[in-house]
Image (tube, rainbow, N blue to C red; front, side, top):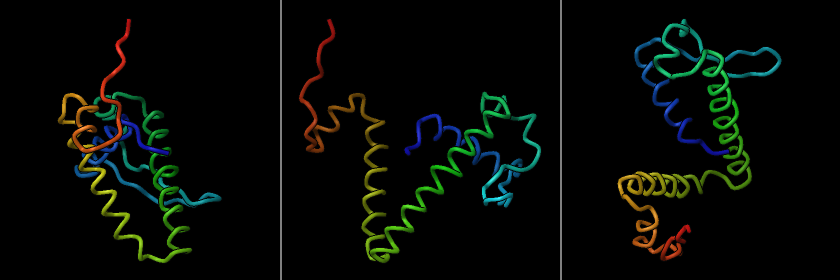
Length: 129
């Protein structure tokens, strides 16, 4: 599963509230372990996130307990089978891709950026009639 743009925006807002000590995360065990948001965050929800308290809970659950934990589950399996020798290469590739995405956001035409970097992207976009 990948993070959407809305997920990324949500995480940025969440980080701000963490820095202000308005929110915290706690590990609970009620049959299985999971992360939950704590503290009183009802008053700032709509102004910070533009969604209901339940919407914040749902997105937090999806990002932290599904996407984030599953990513570490995948890493755990791969490193269990192959060891940690591949980790530096994977981190290097991930950092490079993040930098390329950041640069692509600055470029007005993402297809132009791909062509400049030597991708096999089509040379022109189809014209809609």
